[in-house]
Amino acid sequence: MKTLWILFVLLNLDKGYCTKTHDQVLSITPKTQEQVDIVKNVSTQFETVLWQPVSPHFIKEENQVHLFVPANSSTSVKGLLEKNTITYEVLLTKADELMAMQTRDNSTDPRSSSSFYERYHSLEDIYDWINRTIQDSPNTANLILIGSSYEKRPLYALKLSLNNRPNKKAMWIDCGIHAREWIAPAFCLWFVRHALLHYGKNQDITNILDNMDVYILPVMNPDGYLYTWTTDRMWRKNRSISNSSICVGADLNRNFDANWCTVGASHDPCSEIYCGEFPESEPESQAVADFLRSHKDSVQLYFSIHSYSQMLLFPYSCTLDEAENHKDLLEMAKEAVEKIQRYYRNNYKYGAGARTIYLAPGGSDDWAYNLGIKYSFTFELQDRGQYGFLLPPFRISKACNEALTAVKSIALRVIEKTQVARSSV
Image (cartoon, rainbow, N blue to C red; front, side, top):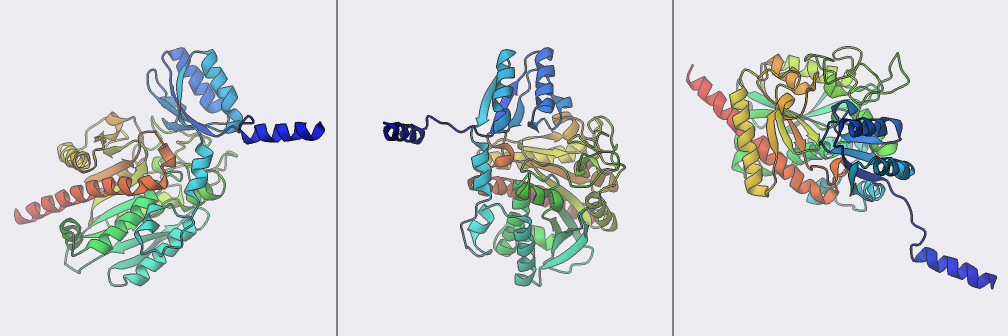
């Protein structure tokens, strides 16, 4: 009889009667100020991670909140939401399985193959890819060490240069300023491959590289990026140690000297939008700022690649004031977004950062703009929340091609404006 009972239990376990609780992502919509306050408390009091908006400060009535809820908090969080009749839906039912899938690499494909670029890669793998790239293209790709991270990891940038024309202008692209936004470094790798593979074959990239050098920083936040692979997939900031708190890390995109630490950033080291102890207090942001300062006469176009939300933003994010060349920036963004819609049937919002989403002082794009790089953009890649920061590998190709379309569109417009300005002198 005892044997039959054990067999019965095993059969029922096999049928799934003993269910596992998974990490999930919830989309929550508070309808009243009271519900807003409850959702703010949920996002800070429980072991959860706020995906969107980035800080509880920005939670508002009738605005969706995307919240990552670990399995051990799921029952409590859902119970509290239901008790207060707060509307929510599950965006991702098994986020833990999706995370495991993203780090799985069963392929032995060489780095020259297309499938290599349709997977996410560890920091070590990206460093290896950088070395392979300069070895394979010694006449066009050069390695530049622009600095090191808080934990002394190298900040490697690639310079793509196809000719030695005098007074040649340049474009800068940085990726991975926020650690958990894995699609961003994937795009930097994608762009380099496209540029080297299609120069002389594709008219647009050939025109761009004939007229511009391109600097690419694949991982601006290597310490944080490594941490998302080894310890906490949801980590956002760098890994610097604060003198005044046990909390680790600063938001590198609040650490530049553009209305530093005003409304939209925080002096609290435990906040996801902690601005650091002072402008450029973080070695990563200081390295980028130093490099751009030393190249401000040649760099005309700046891109910072992020995710998620499908937006193409430009200055200002640190103030509601309009940029001096707002009309030009708006036209460029509009044209780029229209091309994405036409070719890929996907919609992106565009506009000045502060008016399109919210105030975000200390951002790299505003700082670059104020430095004199008058074509400065922040690009939020796929998606709008279905997968969020856990965009599956099968979506990398489309996300990167959308961004590539926009980057090329804007770069060609900048080249055109530069040529017109030169001819009128």
